[in-house]
Image 1 (cartoon, helix red, strand yellow):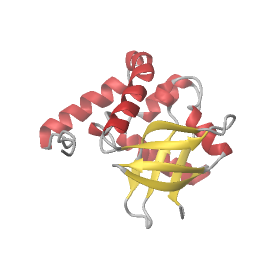
Image 2 (cartoon, helix red, strand yellow):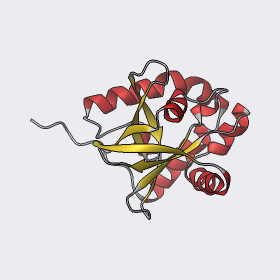
Image 3 (cartoon, helix red, strand yellow):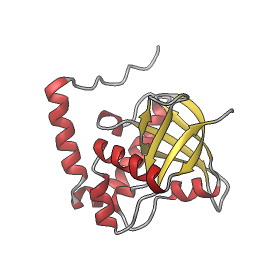
Length: 174
Protein backbone atom coordinates (compact mmCIF):
# COMPACT_ATOMS: atom_id res chain seq x y z
CA UNK A 1 0.00 0.00 0.00
CA UNK A 2 1.50 3.41 -0.98
CA UNK A 3 2.24 5.95 1.76
CA UNK A 4 -0.42 8.61 2.33
CA UNK A 5 0.05 11.87 0.45
CA UNK A 6 1.55 14.78 2.37
CA UNK A 7 -0.99 17.11 3.98
CA UNK A 8 -2.38 19.83 1.73
CA UNK A 9 -1.28 23.37 2.36
CA UNK A 10 -4.10 25.77 3.22
CA UNK A 11 -5.14 28.20 0.48
CA UNK A 12 -6.10 31.87 0.35
CA UNK A 13 -6.45 34.06 3.44
CA UNK A 14 -5.76 31.20 5.87
CA UNK A 15 -2.42 30.48 4.19
CA UNK A 16 -1.54 34.19 4.14
CA UNK A 17 -2.25 34.49 7.88
CA UNK A 18 -0.27 31.34 8.67
CA UNK A 19 2.71 32.54 6.62
CA UNK A 20 2.65 35.97 8.29
CA UNK A 21 2.64 34.27 11.71
CA UNK A 22 5.43 31.87 10.71
CA UNK A 23 7.62 34.71 9.39
CA UNK A 24 7.11 36.74 12.56
CA UNK A 25 7.95 33.72 14.73
CA UNK A 26 11.01 32.87 12.60
CA UNK A 27 12.40 36.38 13.12
CA UNK A 28 12.24 36.06 16.92
CA UNK A 29 15.23 35.26 19.16
CA UNK A 30 13.19 32.49 20.84
CA UNK A 31 12.81 30.70 17.50
CA UNK A 32 16.55 31.08 16.89
CA UNK A 33 17.25 29.37 20.21
CA UNK A 34 14.67 26.57 20.01
CA UNK A 35 14.46 25.65 16.31
CA UNK A 36 18.05 24.72 15.35
CA UNK A 37 18.40 21.61 17.51
CA UNK A 38 14.90 20.34 16.63
CA UNK A 39 13.69 21.30 13.14
CA UNK A 40 16.57 19.99 10.99
CA UNK A 41 16.45 16.58 12.70
CA UNK A 42 12.68 16.32 12.28
CA UNK A 43 12.95 17.45 8.66
CA UNK A 44 15.60 14.81 7.86
CA UNK A 45 13.46 12.10 9.50
CA UNK A 46 10.27 13.13 7.67
CA UNK A 47 12.20 13.40 4.40
CA UNK A 48 13.58 9.87 4.87
CA UNK A 49 10.19 8.40 5.86
CA UNK A 50 8.35 9.93 2.88
CA UNK A 51 11.04 9.37 0.26
CA UNK A 52 11.61 13.11 0.00
CA UNK A 53 7.98 14.00 -0.66
CA UNK A 54 7.51 15.91 2.60
CA UNK A 55 9.42 18.30 4.82
CA UNK A 56 8.19 20.26 7.82
CA UNK A 57 9.44 23.61 6.55
CA UNK A 58 7.78 23.17 3.16
CA UNK A 59 4.37 24.27 4.44
CA UNK A 60 5.83 27.75 5.03
CA UNK A 61 8.60 28.11 2.49
CA UNK A 62 9.91 26.12 -0.50
CA UNK A 63 12.52 23.66 0.76
CA UNK A 64 14.88 20.98 -0.42
CA UNK A 65 17.24 18.46 1.14
CA UNK A 66 20.78 19.33 0.14
CA UNK A 67 23.41 16.58 0.26
CA UNK A 68 26.95 17.95 0.18
CA UNK A 69 30.36 16.34 0.65
CA UNK A 70 31.87 17.04 4.07
CA UNK A 71 34.83 19.39 3.69
CA UNK A 72 36.96 17.44 6.17
CA UNK A 73 35.35 14.00 6.33
CA UNK A 74 34.52 13.57 2.65
CA UNK A 75 31.29 11.88 3.79
CA UNK A 76 27.85 12.82 2.44
CA UNK A 77 26.05 15.35 4.66
CA UNK A 78 22.34 16.15 4.27
CA UNK A 79 20.69 19.34 5.46
CA UNK A 80 17.18 20.72 4.99
CA UNK A 81 17.48 24.10 3.30
CA UNK A 82 14.88 26.73 2.42
CA UNK A 83 15.14 27.61 -1.26
CA UNK A 84 13.77 29.95 -3.85
CA UNK A 85 13.16 28.04 -7.10
CA UNK A 86 14.03 30.27 -10.05
CA UNK A 87 11.32 29.12 -12.45
CA UNK A 88 12.22 31.82 -14.99
CA UNK A 89 15.62 30.20 -15.61
CA UNK A 90 16.21 27.24 -17.90
CA UNK A 91 17.26 24.88 -16.54
CA UNK A 92 15.56 25.77 -13.27
CA UNK A 93 17.95 26.80 -10.53
CA UNK A 94 17.53 27.38 -6.77
CA UNK A 95 18.68 30.27 -4.58
CA UNK A 96 19.70 29.31 -1.03
CA UNK A 97 21.00 31.40 1.88
CA UNK A 98 23.25 30.17 4.68
CA UNK A 99 21.27 31.89 7.44
CA UNK A 100 21.74 29.18 10.09
CA UNK A 101 18.71 30.50 12.03
CA UNK A 102 20.64 33.71 12.74
CA UNK A 103 23.40 31.98 14.67
CA UNK A 104 26.98 33.29 14.81
CA UNK A 105 28.59 30.71 12.50
CA UNK A 106 27.88 29.86 8.89
CA UNK A 107 26.02 26.55 8.49
CA UNK A 108 28.26 23.58 7.71
CA UNK A 109 26.62 22.96 4.35
CA UNK A 110 27.92 26.31 3.05
CA UNK A 111 31.51 25.42 3.94
CA UNK A 112 31.00 22.04 2.31
CA UNK A 113 29.78 23.72 -0.91
CA UNK A 114 32.78 26.03 -0.92
CA UNK A 115 35.15 23.04 -0.62
CA UNK A 116 33.16 20.67 -2.87
CA UNK A 117 30.66 22.56 -5.07
CA UNK A 118 29.04 19.43 -6.55
CA UNK A 119 26.03 18.31 -4.51
CA UNK A 120 22.58 16.74 -4.81
CA UNK A 121 19.38 18.68 -4.17
CA UNK A 122 16.32 16.57 -3.44
CA UNK A 123 13.35 18.73 -4.33
CA UNK A 124 9.91 17.20 -3.78
CA UNK A 125 11.30 13.68 -3.93
CA UNK A 126 13.45 14.14 -7.04
CA UNK A 127 17.24 14.05 -6.83
CA UNK A 128 18.86 16.81 -8.91
CA UNK A 129 22.66 16.86 -9.28
CA UNK A 130 23.68 20.51 -8.74
CA UNK A 131 26.73 22.72 -8.49
CA UNK A 132 26.74 25.39 -5.78
CA UNK A 133 27.85 28.79 -7.08
CA UNK A 134 28.65 31.41 -4.41
CA UNK A 135 27.09 34.72 -5.42
CA UNK A 136 28.90 38.03 -4.95
CA UNK A 137 28.40 41.68 -5.81
CA UNK A 138 25.26 42.81 -7.62
CA UNK A 139 24.20 39.24 -8.35
CA UNK A 140 24.25 38.46 -4.61
CA UNK A 141 22.37 41.67 -3.75
CA UNK A 142 19.59 40.85 -6.23
CA UNK A 143 19.33 37.27 -4.93
CA UNK A 144 19.38 38.54 -1.31
CA UNK A 145 16.52 40.94 -2.08
CA UNK A 146 14.46 38.13 -3.61
CA UNK A 147 15.22 35.73 -0.74
CA UNK A 148 14.19 38.36 1.83
CA UNK A 149 10.88 38.86 0.06
CA UNK A 150 10.24 35.18 0.73
CA UNK A 151 11.55 34.83 4.32
CA UNK A 152 12.96 37.16 7.07
CA UNK A 153 16.64 36.47 6.32
CA UNK A 154 17.60 40.09 7.11
CA UNK A 155 16.59 39.55 10.74
CA UNK A 156 18.85 36.47 10.83
CA UNK A 157 21.74 38.47 9.36
CA UNK A 158 21.39 41.32 11.86
CA UNK A 159 21.10 38.90 14.79
CA UNK A 160 24.16 36.89 13.69
CA UNK A 161 26.38 39.86 12.91
CA UNK A 162 27.63 38.19 9.72
CA UNK A 163 26.74 38.27 6.05
CA UNK A 164 25.06 34.97 5.12
CA UNK A 165 26.51 33.19 2.12
CA UNK A 166 24.12 33.07 -0.84
CA UNK A 167 24.40 30.32 -3.46
CA UNK A 168 22.71 29.50 -6.72
CA UNK A 169 22.29 25.74 -7.14
CA UNK A 170 22.70 25.06 -10.85
CA UNK A 171 21.72 21.65 -12.32
CA UNK A 172 24.64 19.68 -13.72
CA UNK A 173 24.94 16.49 -15.71
CA UNK A 174 24.77 13.46 -13.40
